[in-house]
Amino acid sequence: MTYAGDLGATRHSGLVQITPANVASLAPLWTYRTGDLPRAADSATVWTQEVTPLKAGNRLFVCTAHSQIHAIDAETGVRLWKYDPGARLDWSPLRACRGVGYFKDEAAAPTAACAERVIAPTVDGRLVAVDAASGKPCQDFGQGGFVDQKAGLGQVTPGYYFTTSAPLVVGEHVIVGAQILDGATVGEPSGVIRAFNARTGAVEWAWDLGAADDRKGTDYTRGTPNAWAPLTADPQLGLVFVPLGNATPDFFGAHRSPAMERFGSALVALDFATGKLRWSFQTTHHDLWDQDIPGQPTLFELDTPGGRVPALVQPTKRGELFVLDRRTGKPLLPVEERPAPQGAAAGDFAAPTQPYSAGLPSLLLPRRFTEASAWGMTPLDQMVCRIAFRKLRYDGPLTPPSVQGTISYPGSAGIVGWGGVSIDQARQLLVVNSVHTPFVTRLFPRAQADALGLSIAPNTGNGGTRGSSEAMQSGAKAGLPQIGTPYAAQALPFLSPLGVPCMAPPWGRITAIDLRSRGIAWQRPFGTARDTGPFGWRVGLPLPLGVPSSGGPVTTSSGLTFIAASQDRFLRAIETATGRELWRARLPAGGQATPMTFASAVSGRQIVVVSAGGHGGLNTQPGDYILAYALKR
Image 1 (cartoon, rainbow, N blue to C red):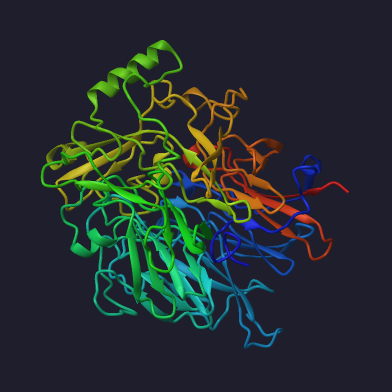
Image 2 (tube, helix red, strand yellow; image 1 turned 90 degrees about the vertical axis):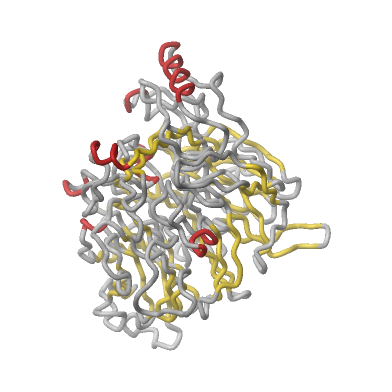
């Protein structure tokens, strides 16, 4: 009853009914339509349907891009209820909801209103709690069922603060961060992490990294790193693990405070009862590349010569996988500080070194981008890519942004995204899908930015910059004003004139990493070109090039990995031990979401469910589908 399967975000199921031997008999069971589709107001935003359903009892709970909540009968796919919180759509440049939280009040009578409640985020920066049985707002939660997360943040411009990830419910705590608009200005709303009481909605604690005291209601420090990804918890240790981004804006950092420098793009562990900091580990120093941590850390037990140790693995946009002792934050597998490219833009600086995972040595980033490797579908566009490469700056990963224009690989869309990783503990295999698309980051001195109109910060969620990493995957012009710094910025995929990456495929991979040997168990291109092509055309060629993806995998104890995510419209079943694709189902829309699987309390069948609603940034088919599959009887 928790997003990602459990509080440790393993994305693993112990079910064994569907196996590599019988998965070919998997067939559609039911299809549910939410009715929530792109609207005219979404034309200047990025539309996505990324939800992973949450099961409680015999009900599935889902949220939609416009923050509706639906309850579905898990066995039949019949709607039980629907609730629309009436979210203001001008408060978010991204239409997304990845999941909901669930709280059962053990002190309440089972039949009491809101004894079980669904707690969901909205795109206008609120939390809503509704009765799991009826869908009616819980009147004792906040004001009439709502808590305004913008309270205490001071001035919040529409479009600058919104929530897309599922709340973390631990005991009676509802712990949340939020997404802050990328690249607009210094002093954007605070990235404060708060715990709300699941019954009353009252703030129980607030971790404001810019303040020495525990602030619970007002005057949170502006411009601090935020956590837009889901959070993870270890109740036995009393810790919540928070993956942070960088301070605003993204591509210039001379103005950042010591606290912002310490916690930017860091994983922090907080005491979930008090919010007090227990430890932190930084994945990128003085982040100038929008390398915020996009996915949950995943908890597991690491086999070592001295026995099993409580560990976590933190995936990053850089493709580095850091394995830490979750009790202390100390690396369990070696981490090395290596010299980093220098030469930041005038007025800024670059960190002299950056951390690299020597224990799992850059397994997801196996190739260096060079002029000779610049690629095109034809000799002509290959030549254009190589000419462009020569004009741009590139001294390897984490080359600082420049007025000249810098190739950023990994780019700001990242190698690993919000879908995170799945761990099969028994097999000690970590499964992850990754994206391989270089970006070009360019800085514009303020006078030039003024002339180009890049110095105007957006004032609504429906206009202005499309600067989030989700938006930038679309190739749309991404003007980032960065008001309060000497430079505006632009971050775009490095594409050929045909609109395909200037790097040879595969542009997407799926990989299994053996946590015992610390090496790759298998790695494959992920996805085909069936639903993509030059100029964004869907050419229908099922070439296994490996394409971008958004969403994550789920593994099972029977030895299967289920994953959609890819730019082509398929749900796949892969043999976890070998990487062989054993089954696939064509989806009616883009499946940019993480699947889930459960055992039906009614029929005893194992059922696999996935959301298929598309992703505007990946240019996949929009839709409003929740689809379920089970073995043929």
